[in-house]
Amino acid sequence: MNKQNWIELKLYGNQQDIDILMAYFNNESIGSTINDNFTSIYFNDNMKNKVNHHLKLYNQKLNFDWNITLLEQENWHLSWKDNFCPVKIGKKIIIIPSWDKKTKSEVTIRIEPGMAFGTGHHQTTFLAIKLLEEMISKSSSVLDLGTGSGILAITSKMLGAKNVDAVEIDQDCIENFQYNVKINNLKNKIDFYHYDVLMWDKYDYDIIVANINKNIILKLIPNLKSSKSQIILTGLLNDDYDFIIKICEKNNLKVNQHLRKDEWIALKVSNES
Ligand SMILES: C[S@@+](CC[C@H](N)C(=O)[O-])C[C@H]1O[C@@H](n2cnc3c(N)ncnc32)[C@H](O)[C@@H]1O
Figure 1 (cartoon, rainbow, N blue to C red):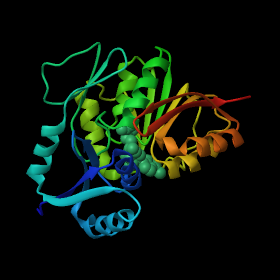
Figure 2 (cartoon, rainbow, N blue to C red):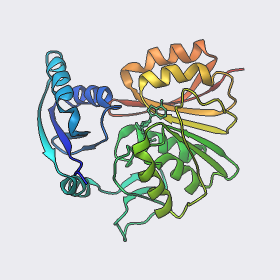
Figure 3 (cartoon, rainbow, N blue to C red):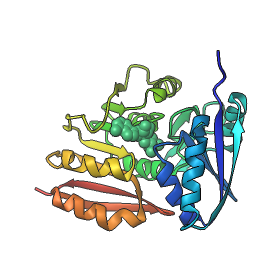
């Protein structure tokens, strides 16, 4: 069997500019880690030319340096292991790597870093989890749109939600999602749908969470306009705030709360009527 290789793009420089790049590459990348002096974004190795091309274009407007290295399969996993520290979120949640046998909190979520986005290190995942902790009760039904690693669906279930559905378009996420569900002892307790969120048409949940990206969120908002759910929208930059609010208002959705972390934002919205 051929070995799958990846590339690691290391970005140095102005964090605001790096956040813009991360948002741009969000859909194309297969993960990222934020370190003290640099940010790494990982891609399949066939993306190298495309990534280089876009970096050269962005480098004319933004302030950053970069280098790209090839990672072989084994190194990829080691690289994640080196960078995956526990993440404490809100009052009672901690996200730990699958191999950590010691760290614990009231709600402990294990994640195997893999091909899917969602280890808790990214600001948008962090903000969504913070809001979920405030919103979920024992009777809640939850829809997780763009589930990736399953981190938000798993968190919802671990916080006590009654029913959780998770939707993801990317076939490569399925194995990681299922593994994460298993190591959190939630086998058969979350329903997974391999589906495009823009084709999804069931919105009668107490809580809907969508951590995707600006383009998909913009297309999703009109589909959510008659939903009675409390909705978390993220994958958005601070700079998107005014524009997204206008689109929400046009679709009868009122922004009830927003949280920011670095350059990222999460909105809690609901139908006004
Ligand atoms: C930013 S990641 C979020 C992962 C995880 N929910 C989290 O909060 O960390 C966005 C996820 O949405 C998925 N996605 C993007 N477009 C989608 C679509 N049209 N339908 C379903 N999933 C989509 C991506 O494949 C990716 O796994």
